[in-house]
Length: 496
Image (tube, rainbow, N blue to C red; front, side, top):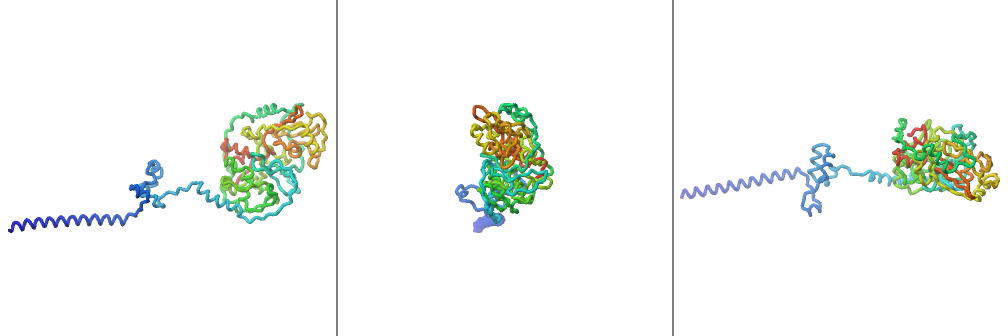
């Protein structure tokens, strides 16, 4: 009896020990789990994860190279790879794109295209002749410094919407003729220089089939391209040549509209930026003279134009710490024209410069236009005091060229001067183009055969200062930035 009792006691004791051991292990495991759960964050699973019944993916789960590239320190790497980081935005890197960021800027800017109170004064509308878009001043100075071209208020030659259809800045006019036209090239032959001869002449100058330029000039150390100034903090007044009224508005808004009118958003962004800086400088040039710039505008500004203007906000072009007369036209024909040979004033920053890529301007380079004898007679006799003879081949002759390619001195049926545009003038290429025949450029040749006059023009516009098409070509083919474009066309200037 005693032996059986002892065996039972042993079995019972062992059972109790087993029960207590299991209970102890259970309590220990439960306690550790509770401690871990209390220390770790609770990560709710998304509906997709619940359906998939699998752990959430890390941001770099399939891109080990991205993990290595983005590592900053071991703890951050561990957190990013081990935790469900997409559930914790503070652990994720900001993924805002440039376009996303600028969308907010441009949205705000577009709503600010009326940021400043608009003062509108209706201007008297005069009958004008429209051919091409240009820039000018609505107020005429009574006196002009010797170093500056003297402009007279003339008929409107603007109103186009883009350089694809016409040039832009070209209703600045002579107040006094320049009697000393530069005769840089030989006179034409008795029958005049033909288009073929002119083409060969251009080849001799290295314009056609010229070797590719070495590239843009280095950055100008005198420039300060980062400024805290802003067009948005200024109110300026212009005469809107499109809507025929004065506008006093926020400068940023007007620069956007002017840039949109002049070049739109179809060009290289660097060319658009160059146009924006030139447009603002043009406004400020006339403002510092106590005058009002006359220039076209176009609303509904595209986002790219706003972005480009915003990137150069506050910048202008200076010479001797003064705003320059930043003239521009649609296109040149291999060289730009010096201001002295167009408007009669010699500005140091408006000199003739070679344009390496103009031969690729297929729309404006070598454009052929024909006129009948009757059309030419009507134009000349209605615009001048000259009565033409029947010797048609002598009606229009180019006697000399300025700045390599621009028609300088002309004769009309033997006359080298005439009463044109209300005053006695020397007949130059610019005078002929402005007052007599609205050809695209003064870089032209003319020939006569079988009752037809044939004009071959190179470029579009007066040719002074920046070429808009040229700026686009320099940016696209030459890799020029906006400031390098401006330094190419405006010599000796500073941008700040």
